[in-house]
Image (spheres, rainbow, N blue to C red):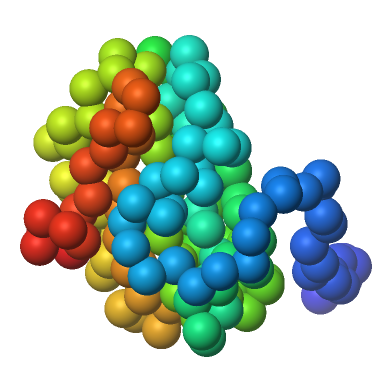
Length: 148
C-alpha cells in the first residue's frame, strides 16, 4: 500500500483593513445601500459585497466577494458564504454596483439572488436582501420588491 501525507489545515480570517461606520442595526435597504455605496462607490467594474450581520443584524464585517468587469461579476455561493461561515454570521446582505448607473437587476442578478437565497436557507445563514447600486442615491432592493 502506498502511503502519503495528508495536509492538516487550519482556517482563519485575516482582517484586511476596515471601514468607518456607525454600529447600527440594519433595518432598511437604504441603510445597506448607503453603507455599501461608501465602500464601492462609483467603481468602474462590478463588485459584489457581503455585509456579514450578527444576531441583532448589526454589521460585524464586510467581505468583497468578487470584482468583475464592466457588465458582470462571477459569483459562486461558496465564495459568498465563506466569510459568513468563518465569522459566524447570523445573516447577510448582498450588494453590488452597476457601473452603467442603472440599478435595474439583470436576469443574471435575479438568478444569483435565488441561488444565494437557497444556499443561505441550507446553511442557516439567511440572505436578507440583495441591493443593486446605481448612480447617485438610486438602488434596487430585492427585499423591498418582494422578490427575496
